[in-house]
Amino acid sequence: MPFTLATWNINSVRLREPLVCKLLEEEGPDVLCLQECKSPVEKIPLERFHALGYTHMVARGQKGYNGVAILSKLPIEDVGDKDFADLGHARHVAGRLENGVTIHNFYVPAGGDVPDREVNEKFGQKLDYLTEMRDWFHGDAPQKSILVGDLNIAPREDDVWSHKQLLKIVSHTPIEVDHLTDVMEAGKWVDITRQDIPEGLLYSWWSYRAKDWDEADKGRRLDHVWATPDISNAAHGSRILRDARGWQQPSDHAPVFATFDL
Image (cartoon, rainbow, N blue to C red; front, side):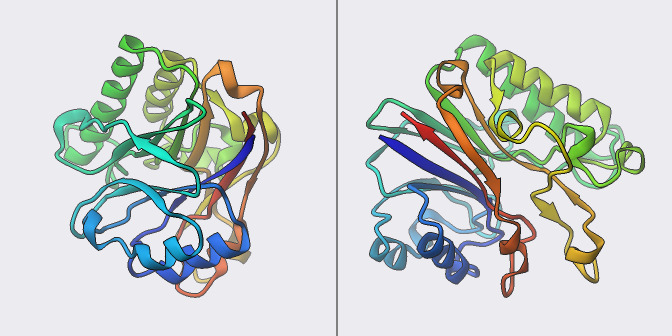
């Protein structure tokens, strides 16, 4: 049975409950992974999601910050979480579908504004978080798994509006890209979005600071869908729902989709 999965940094699931419902109604993914929910689990607004058929959820919450949730039409088992870098943040949760596929939902730290861990503690935390992700996947090689989320790094030159101008900007610095590459290699992860869309500029995030985000189009691909090699060939149909960035009171991220024939 094929299933479609979407990942979206929603930037407050309670504030943007209508947008989540709009996405569920109009696009109908079988699984929706949300990041930056900014809500304790018990306050995630489930009633309308349930009414739309999303009767299953695994989540980790935090008041006002972070938070990750997997909403699903399909039965899903909670298989835990990891507090990488011991930050005490709700940034990871994993669920397993009945077909045996494990879904890891991540919200990697943004890293602040200055790409120097000596003067910016948040940048150091980001690098440490990625290092511990790498070590975890080295030690426990994932199989039949999908990794999604706001990884807060745009790794390729065509994942940003200007490679040259963003080389010293957090999210596209060489050290961050190297750390993310190490995570990918440790788990032998395949970038499904770029497997399906191998060429061309591709963005999932546009800053709130832009007067006209669409016209300026200074985006970055911060949101990712990866899969292990044993199921990567079953993936297809990747796309980014750019239009969602223009919805009323939007998140600054757009949802990323992929379908798996499993």
